[in-house]
Image (cartoon, rainbow, N blue to C red; front, side, top):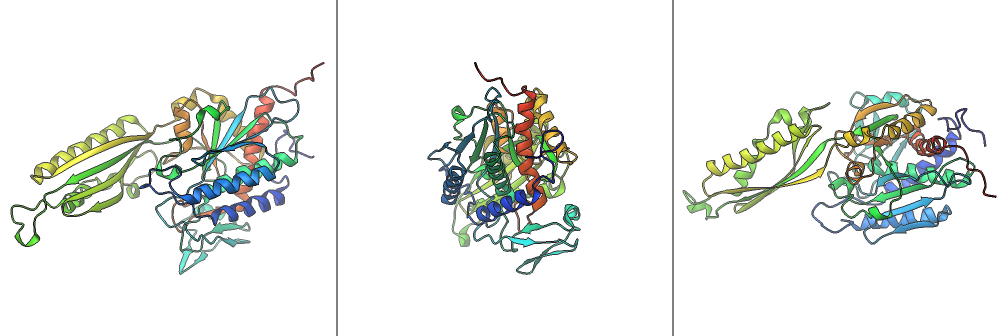
Length: 434
């Protein structure tokens, strides 16, 4: 089999096969309704995720992978054996998540392929269009195929693109056993979008010293840094009275909740920040006269700024209790994940490998920060450094989500190139025993 001059795959190597395979898998997975449910404490939080995990288990077995296990919480871990002579190479892992965001419907997703993109607006359907003025990365894919949903749902490229890319990489390796690589682990996780992807992860089953989540954005992006993240649940208790006779008696919990949300600094909201700036973001509000709840997420790259925001929320709660005598405003603060950069910096070879893998494709790597988090952030805390690598998905969590087919093929090859580069880093093929 002809390979790139470095021993790694180039962007053009069997491009048609990679793109056909990854698109077929992505379209199949995108149609499975896997929206996660933050109100359900079960894992997985929705049955659609279980169905997708079972589908993946069957597909991996069809590829000839026999070392795999799907547990009752829908964590699927599969292992590709090392190519002959590379059994001594340590294992490396690749992760993607099964669920899609609950922020918009992921039911009855109808992917639309826009072939030979001409650089103009893309008609999604249902009266919606994607304007390249709002998505300038589209200009990189003129003449290529771009996939969107039909305007009525999100697409689910976050992270079904990553799922498809990992499985395509596995399929290629299984049909090309001469590509050098050590043991490879594939892991698919539920409920990442609601911050619970690692809650029941079977860490004892993972053999890899480090991993990569295939859950990033722009083609060529490598993300070793993410937000520090907390979830805050605000429980508000009022005092109920008949509205017609409420003077001096009613303490309206709905009014207190509205004032809590209004008290969040507008200049520190997601819609007002970018780059290195964090935010407060209310994600759900449930309110009545007697009680109310506000769920919000708090994010920042530095722990000091995160603590400042948490302190502000505590002060805001106290001020509202003073403003509305008889009201109770209680905060439940829960850490979701931490910035993984410091730990990943202790292992520079992890980034060097993915840098080499991307450059072999002919793509310039782009080191950037995730304005969010991944299962990799939690896995890094658990002792397995796991930076994030591009999947090509763009405009995540909404009706304007899209992904370019070229980027999906490149991501699948990046998985292969990382494994091959790691085998090369750990020495040549081991001599057969006498």
